[in-house]
Image (cartoon, rainbow, N blue to C red):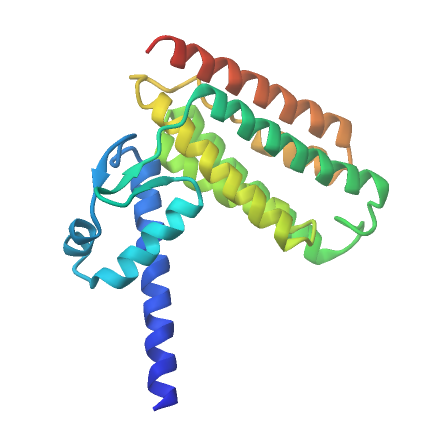
Length: 234
């Protein structure tokens, strides 16, 4: 029956997404390490599901740059270099600079004054930022990654372009995967993690794009220096 087929497709699609998200989280948490190999069968057995949604999830993660596919050996976690990280930061900078430029050019089209929905959304983004900062100060990397991704996802959504928001989210996931691979080598992460989230959203709330640019530029400069230093120590 058409209804049954549709429900089955939805269920499989949902399962595919759940597996992809679970594996992405495993990579971000450092439990799946750079270069680690596995097969569709191994993942299917681990999650107790059929091979089809697992294979689809792994293909999705490969398309996102998180996994490498090997026709004969299955999949392995992608290993990022310091040069990869530099390219990601450059791409991220272009996107955020475009966001800030749009805000400067027509601030009533983006984050308009007096709109209670915008005020509520900014307050929500700020709360995510506060949680991210607490995690950063405590050196809790996995918690920080989760809040940081939500923070930037919600912040970029305020600019009303879902393609921009999706691209920035994908870039931030890739950047975090690369960063985590290096940061896991440090025994104490306190003092090494960015915690300028509330400062940035406050600057944007008052339409101070120059301050916002300076905050992000300093963030990227520090991140590049840290990854270069850690990569050089290998």
